[in-house]
Image 1 (spheres, rainbow, N blue to C red):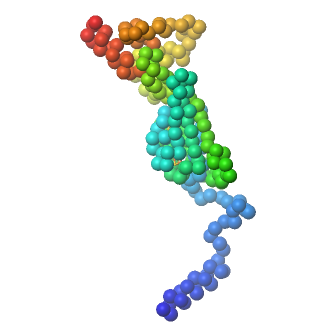
Image 2 (image 1 turned 60 degrees about the vertical axis):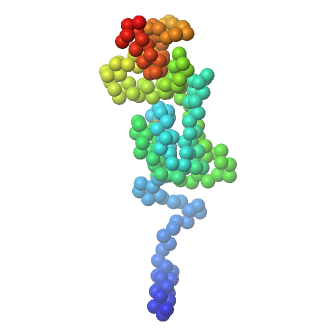
Image 3 (image 1 turned 180 degrees about the vertical axis):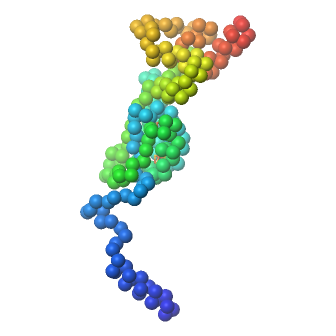
Length: 206
Ligand code: SF4
Ligand code: SF4
């Protein structure tokens, strides 16, 4: 019993004469150490609204809501739930959509809604069945990644035509009838509807 007491005494004296390991934040400033994981900061210009970060966020701090009518995806990031694990940054498909700050860490607030952020992205909705395809920015990002290979998909071609504004002011899309027809391939339709048209008209030749 004697030696442990001496050891504790030695530790007490040592800690009295050595500087404190902790900082005096918030009275004084605090400089986080290298690779400190602080607040995830979103760069909206490089975020395509793809949902990947929501799928990997362990505490579900990132959620998405899709409004088919308005064609808007709302991304909600609740930093009151965030555990600063860095999964969103690590798995971001653009590599630049979200990055954990190493300087912003003081997010304490009396109102929880003060630490919630929102983004909105335009959605691509199938003009036949109403299925949500993805966001317009996500598809454009895939175009850039795929390069010329993107033109293998007629969906990509339709979106590219809009982007290039080759027929600006003209409505080239034809009303989709009750049953899908070959001409409907030139509307924005989801991969499932596109497959139905392909099988019916291009493979079977109906
Ligand atoms: S750091 Fe982790 S917990 Fe926080 S938003 Fe990103 S994935 Fe979610
Ligand atoms: S993974 Fe990246 S690009 Fe996709 S929604 Fe999250 S931040 Fe945006």
